[in-house]
Figure 1 (spheres, rainbow, N blue to C red):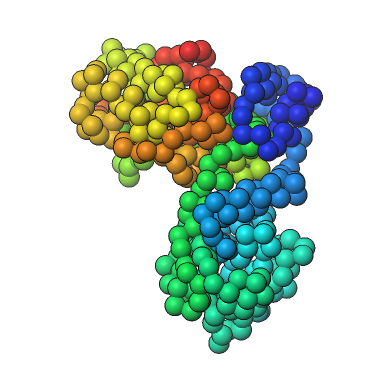
Figure 2 (cartoon, one colour):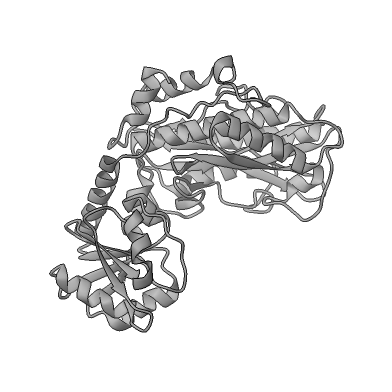
Length: 428
C-alpha cells in the first residue's frame, strides 16, 4: 500500500473530501492485477485490501460523541439501540435478533449499558466493550421494566428516551408500556450521524467501489455465447475475492434486463444481448453498489439510443450535486432528461427513484427521490442510478456511488462509463 493511500484511509473525523485526496487512492488501485507477486491464482488479480487498517477505538469514540451531540440538540436523554447495524456502527457489537430483547442504552453523556438475556451474558461479555455495564433479565422477567432500573442508575428519572430506527414493533411497544419516561422515535439521531461519512469511511467506500468495477470488468471479459447468468456471476464473485473483498454481481441477459430487480424467467447469453449487472462488496463494513450495462456483441441503434439517454441523465444529475441542493431536486434533474427524450412521464420507464444513501447498509437514509426536502451536505454518500426499462425488449441502468464534497460531488471508484461498448473507460 502506498503512503498516500494509507494516509487517505486513516484520516478520520473530517467529513470533507479534500482536493487531491481521492485521486491518491485511485492511482494506487489502478495497477491492480499488475503486481505478479500478489496476484491470486485463477483470476490473476491482485489483493488490494490486505493492508487496509481497521476501524479503531478512536473511530467508535468519535461516532458516539456525534450521537450524544444529536441527542443534546434534540433534548433527548437516552437512546436504545437493538442489535443490528447501529450497534455495529456505534459500539462494534454484532448480535443477531431474536424474540429476546438485547441492546444498548446510551445516555446523553455517553455512558452505555446493555440489556441482555441472563443466559446470554457470558457470550455478551465477549463482544461488549469493556467498561459497559450489562443488565440481565431472566426468562420469566420483563426486559422492558428493566429499563426503569437502568435509567434510574443513570440519573434519568423523567425525560425523553429515544428508540432506534430498526426496533421491532413489539419491542418499542413494550418499552412504551413499561417505562416512565417519554418514548420518542430516535431515527433522526442515528441517521444524521451515519449520513455524514468521515474521510476514513469514504476511503473504504472508494476502494469497495473500485473493486466491484474491476470485478465486473473481469467478468465481462469472460462472456461467451450460451453462458448462464450463474456462470458470469461466479466469475464476478471470484474476481471480488481475488481483489480482497468478497462480493457479488447479479447479471441479467436480453429481455430479462428490463426487470429492475430481476425475474424468475431465465435466458442464456445470446449475441446482441444487453447485459446488466448489479452488486457490490464491502470494506470494513462500508459498501459499494454498482450497476453496469453493456452489450454482448454489437449494439443496435435502439440499444445505443436508450443507453445514451440514461448516461446523459446520470451525468446531468452528477453535475447538479452540491451542498444546499435538495435530494428531490437531483432526482428531478435526471428524470427530466429521460422524460424530454420521450421516456416519460414520471415512473413509466424510469421506474424508481434516482438513488439511495449508502454506507454500512446497501440502502440507507437519505434518498434521492421526488419531493424529498433533505438538503445535501458534504460527506453524504449516495448511488446515482437512472434507468429505462422496456418490458419485452431490454433495460438499461448505470449506477455509480458518489460523495457530496464542499463544491460538488466526487464519484467513488472511478472507471466511468463512456458508452454501451465501453462501460469502464470514460471520463466526463
